Structure formats: structure tokens, C-alpha cells
Image 1 (cartoon, rainbow, N blue to C red):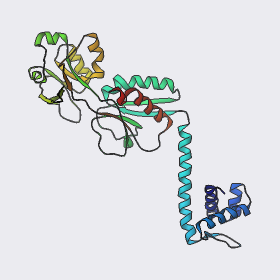
Image 2 (image 1 turned 180 degrees about the vertical axis):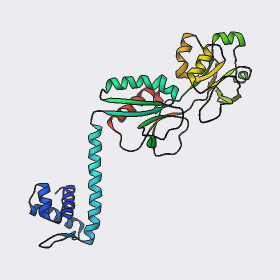
Image 3 (image 1 turned 60 degrees about the horizontal axis):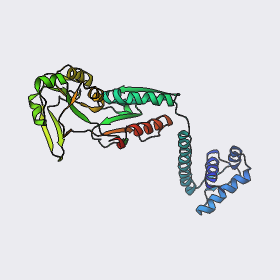
Image 4 (image 1 turned 90 degrees about the vertical axis):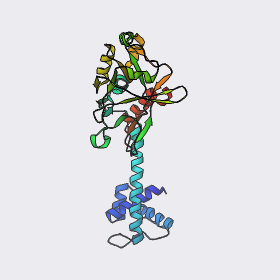
Length: 299
């Protein structure tokens, strides 16, 4: 006899108080229900149910066995539900959080492709550079920049978030081109300001020998939005240390010039994080697409 079926009949017998009621629930005879319970008793080597002419009651061992059976049956049912969910079509609302620049430049185009492939899903994307609590604020996934703190979230690594130093040809014609990180101290540096921390006072670079160069920077223009700093840089306002994804088109068109050949700005680790609870089909497909397009293989 199937052990899980026998356990389910045993639990139903205990809940209903009779073999007849359990038999009716499973569409079998009362004798067969009794046989299932007897098989379990033979397997564990102890009586599980006290049988009387009026009602059945659990023995002490039967009560303990009953609790364990209920837990096992619940786990089995949950496993089946997960398997069914994984095979279902993605549908419903998907709430995602991401940093402003990466979300606007990279994630929004990906979401457009995701929605075309999954017509029963709608996405709510919130862009903010502050740290959000996925559980408390109801997000199903988020893009995180920087080192991760210990948490219960599952994290999938993505390509590093690279920064590049650049300036407009007009600015460089007027002020000259810095050839080393130290030369930036003589230039107007456009500084990004996080809402939750003070403005940056230094930029970090690494040379080909893996030597780190920490440079104090100063400038008269600070902003908490990369687009504002980019506009300033394009208009000759100074040197910008910007996410590569935000300036690649301007660099390709020659409207900005990449600086400090032979030096790399400090890259920030980037992850896709999501709660360890049940992953729905809509989220699973989204995770797969993000990792395929922005995974560490693109570093």
C-alpha cells in the first residue's frame, strides 16, 4: 500500500473519529480504511488507534504519529503546489525595485521585452537609490548595488556596475585633459549626491598594476540625478564619473570623451535579490531574463 495514502487515511480517521467517515472521504470501504491503518501499525510496531464499537481514539504513540503525518502530508501538498506553479503560465502583477540610472537605462528596455513575451503579466517598476525592504514594502525582486549585507534574500550576481570618467570636448579644449587620477584635483568634478549619505569627496581608480589611486575631488555642482550631471558635462560643466550604461551613447557619438586611459574607476557589485519564499512563474521568468542579459558572463 502507498504509505502517504495510508497516512492520509489515518489522519482522516483521527479527525473524523471513525473508519466509516474516512472511507467515505476516500471512496473506499470501511474495511479497506481499517486495513490501511493496520498496515501503518505493523510498520511502526505499535497501536495507533484504540478501537471501540462507538468511536476510535488515538493512543499516546498515535497522537505523536498523527502530528508528524499531518506535517508530512502538508509538505507533500506544498511540493505539488510548487511544481504546478512552476509549470503554469506567468500572470499577474510583478513589483520590481531598482536604482534610478540602471533602472531607466537598462531595466526598462528589458521589461518591455519581458512584457511582450508574457502578455498576462503587468510590471510595476519603482526607481529609487535608497535601500528598500522587499518584504515590508511588497516588492518581489530588486536590483541592489554594492556589497550585500547578510539577509534571508536569495541573491543572483550580475555584471559589475562600472563607472567611467569623461568630459565634453569643449571642456577639455578649455581646461586640458587629465592624464592621471591625481590631475583631477585641478578640475571641476561633477559629484553625485545620494539622498541618504553626504556627497562623495573622493574617487577611486585602479591602474594596470592593480594599484589603487584615491583622489580627493571638488566641484561647484552636485546633484542626486545622473541625468542632471550628464547635462552639465555635455554643456562643458566639468568631469563626470558616471555609470557606463548612462554615457555609452554620448561616448560613441563623440559628445563626451573617455578620460584616464589605463585607469579603471572602482566598479560596484550588482545583484538581483528576491525573497526565499515561493518563486512564482512570473518572477522565475523575470529572474532568468535578467540573469541572461545582465549576468556576470557580460563582465
